[in-house]
Structure formats: structure tokens, C-alpha cells
Length: 124
Image (cartoon, rainbow, N blue to C red; front, side, top):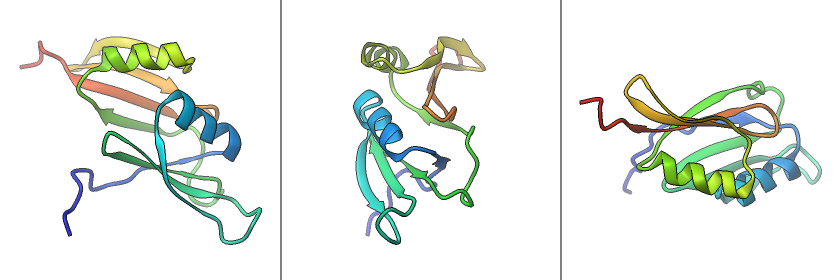
């Protein structure tokens, strides 16, 4: 078995499966790897993936609280920014150069933040 490059999978608490699924899949371009419910109509726990980066979304109130922040290191913040902007993402912080990274922050329907960042060419 080959281990993926990403060795930790962060989780966000969500409050609406349908709203979050639409946002993460249709607007942010993630794909659903799997979904789990203990019983029909129970809270969902799901895995999403984009470009070999995975995250979990959970409706289970005991897993974590809403309002988290996850960092993703990507090769081109500007192209992702244009893609997200064109799809109507809630961009709370457009591309900027901070602490040696070009980064931007997107906020999901629950207030969780996804920060996409690439090493700045001036950070050598």
C-alpha cells in the first residue's frame, strides 16, 4: 500500500448537508470520495477530495465546532482565485502576499475558512 502525500485529514463541522455539498462540489470543485450515516436521516460524515488533498465534513455536533480554518498548499493561487470567483465562492480574503506565501481565504456556508496558499517567489 502506498501512502498519500497528505498524512492528516482535517475536518470541518457543517450544519446543512445539502448546502455544504453544493458549495464544496459545485463551487469549490471538490469530489465526494464517500459518505457515511449510521442510519437513514442521521447526520452525515463525508470525505471530499481535490488535487490529492482530502478533507472531512461532519454534521456530528460532537466531532468539532463550526468556524475552523484549514490551509491548503497549492501551485497557483491566482488561477484558483479566478475559478472560485467565477463560480461565486465567498472569497473573504483575495490573493495577497503574507509571511512568504501568496494566499487567499474562502469561507463556506457555516463560516469555516479554507486558506489556499503557494510559496511566494520572493520568499527564498
